[in-house]
Amino acid sequence: MTDKDHDARSKAQVDAIGIPDDEPHFLPDPVQDRLLEAMITLGGELWVEREYRMRLEAVLVSKGLLSRDEIESYAFSDAARGAQKESLDAMVKRLFEPLKTIPGKR
Image 1: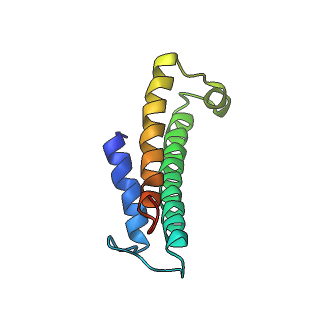
Image 2: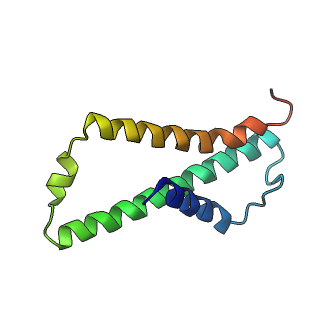
């Protein structure tokens, strides 16, 4: 799954619960609204990753390509860790984006 595909699936998870693109108001405090938005974004990220991992692991194990133990004990290369860092940075940016627009904060 590309980062673009991942981002689209994560956004779809958030959109599925119906948060409008304009200023949502669910709680009495705008800071709480922003934290709620960040939490929902994180939940979308988590589910996309979990679903993809479960599907991938099931295919690998069902075809006898890898065992669950091999999956758990795999160590990433330095290059792969660099790519993971870029992906993590992008996710953190998406997660904290709602907090940048807290009213009255600069």
